[in-house]
Image (cartoon, rainbow, N blue to C red; front, side, top):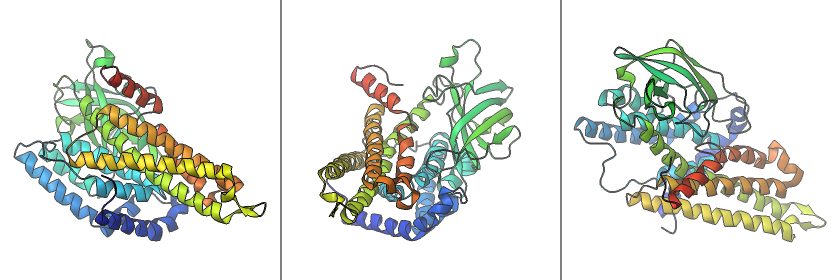
Length: 405
């Protein structure tokens, strides 16, 4: 795949107009925390008929599940191009919107619809994929970080036909506002090494006894994506809230790792949006800003930065296009391949955003020129969905023929 098709370009143009007309005017309210992102995202869904398409796709998946067919056992591949194009265009102005959207519909909704029974899909999954409700995916903890599965301390203790959950989750996207939370906990198995105990995903609802959702945390960037903590104190849940089988050897570990692959591949599209916007702003500024009687774009050191930005854009764009082509052919990236995409793209986005600030000089350090926001928003790409160091480890273990965790 060498380029987007004419139809895909039309999709990108339409989303870009929406971003310019609807999102950019509300950036200040989003950045200062005055406006949670969900009404804006629902407006996006209504404008482009995404809600109706998501609902139709959900009903087809639900019908297959009722027939006993796995929702992942399709012939052929899926086409991620429309969603990736939307991601790229939103990330030009507010990457946090994509983070909130992806976690709610993709991680929370996607996990329920992949692992859940038809009843669970109807109860929670439908409203999540249509954005009628907001979802959170809670796996990270204060003392586990990148060791999310092995170091997990949140426990699920069997109590008859129910489970009792205790623990704390942090860095939870949508946590403060989520209506539905997919929470991972380790089964209390006294005779099993704590690092190897089964990990089980449960579905919780806002307001349940013992479930507390913190206020949004103050953070460096991605202010359009509210992040918080989740506290579990003797939260009693029935088996109707358990996703999958608590007797299976792996529990929910496989689903968590599948989500890691999806997340990491998606970060490349986010990075591309940031890179394209930072480059556009830098080129425009280099053409119009004059120093010593000439546009700064005439100076070789500035040209070097612009050239490096273009190299990054070409490389990350090629990654995204290749991912689209392989997905259409039914090829899912390995964890190591997804990690390689994520590692390179995240670093490239941060380097480009940093160079953009340098091109702008002092103007790049103030909010008016927007490149400082792109820098702040890009930086977390090297941390969430697995830090750079975790990506390097995953890639190296694959090259060495060792199991990748």
